Amino acid sequence: MTQWHRYPGGVYKSREDLFQELEERRKRIMALGDAKVLEKRKKAGQLNARERLAHLFDGGEYTEIGMHVRNRTVHFGMDKANVPAEGVVTAYGKVNGRYVAAFSEDFSSMAGSFGEFHGKKEAACVQFAMDKGMPVIGLNDSGGARLQEGMDTLESYGWLFHTQDLASGVIPQIAVLLGPCLGGQAYHPIMQDFVIQCRNTGFMGIAGPAFVETQTGEKIGLEELSGWQAHAVKSGQTHLVAEDDKHAIDLAKTLLSFFPSCNREKPPRVSTADPEDRPVPALDTMMPDEPFRPFDMYEVIRQIVDEGFFLETLGYHARHMITGFARFGGRPVGIVANQPMVSGGILDCDAADKAARFIRFCDLFNIPLVTLVDCPGYLIGSQSDWAGILRHGAKLLYAWSDATVPLVSIVLRKSYAGAHYGMLDKTIGADLVFAWPTARITIVGAATAASVIFAKEIKESKTPEETKAQRLQEYSEIYENPYVAAERMCVDEVIYPRDTRKIINRSLDLLANKFVQPGTCPWKVWRKYSNINL
Image (cartoon, rainbow, N blue to C red; front, side, top):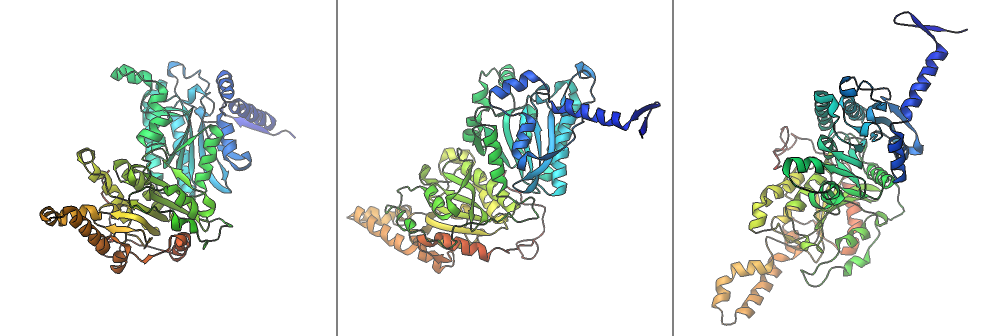
């Protein structure tokens, strides 16, 4: 028996008609936008908006939400415009077995332009993820603001930015740049925790080349202005660089594997065949005999982490500072390390910014942190001072001091002056500090100290070079070795390098249930937040 459903105005439709209408609408929207654009991008090796989501979610299965949303503007031809799904597909599904929300912009639908309801769909996706306690991934591919919608477009940006801010620190947010992302559109990837950019197709900038030339007279190409080198190398805003769409999405999935779904959970621990107490004899001979001869910190990391796997972030930027994720005994851990092979592993403005942001992310999402230290100090000199090294360097101090996750520091060699705190020591917040026998921990290096303390004696000596060498050795023996720091309880133990992996795993076991509640200690009184030097 046919059932009839009355619509306003006295129109009747059968159930079959209603289902047919739904099917037709879904087919029209699922077909996405301009076929020519889709074909051109397919030839270039790019996936379409829904193919990207299928590659992201386990088994290609996901539930789309907001499919039927459309603009309400009728001006400037928008009443006749065909913008399926408002140029962005929003959905949820499982990634690595856990629920994740995502939005995927569709360049074939009016260039994926950001209009009122395009923005509200993205904001609703972020809000949905925050309410349900799951990460959100943005697959960005948009020509920018939809100017035809005027003020409605402008207000929708604010709606999205505000929602992203509320979600920051509550759920992990990852932005993937698979196409252009210019103008106001570029702010929402930057407000997310990590940015992944396709090497040949991803572009991000506050304005495109044409607008830059019109407003400033500067002639510059899109690749130079907004390409991967502009942000992965120079600006330090792109964390990972991908070769194509699939690689970029795979990197996002790998990142997610280290994170909890939200800030109320611990990161997922996985099984590993790599023994937690595995000795690493190669580390005993890795350190050069000469104190300022560089060694490769990446090799140390590969030797001590589970199965040698390390996912570096911002690897092209401030290369003297290493940040990234690895596992110890199956536990996700954030690693902060100096790279002596580049600028001696010194701390400058970029290195401090890079590490501080990474530390705060790990702390927000309950990821323990391990530092590997070989740092001569903060960069000095007029250019460094004028660039704001004190302000930028202070970010590191704030980050460590505010952190409540397990904090373990391994001092391999130099830990001098402000870098002693900038790379995590006991007084700034470390739970455990260990040192190799090659560690040199003091206010300044022996050569510098000797030239100041014994300057007059050396100058007046009949054999100044001999006196200088004698005093330098004396200062080094008294203050520069790790045992003095251990005597003062600044170092918990001096360890054999080969035991580094075992010691870190034991430390993380001990600190697994570390809990810090503001207000329980005199220095942890209630406050909104620290006034960090931004």
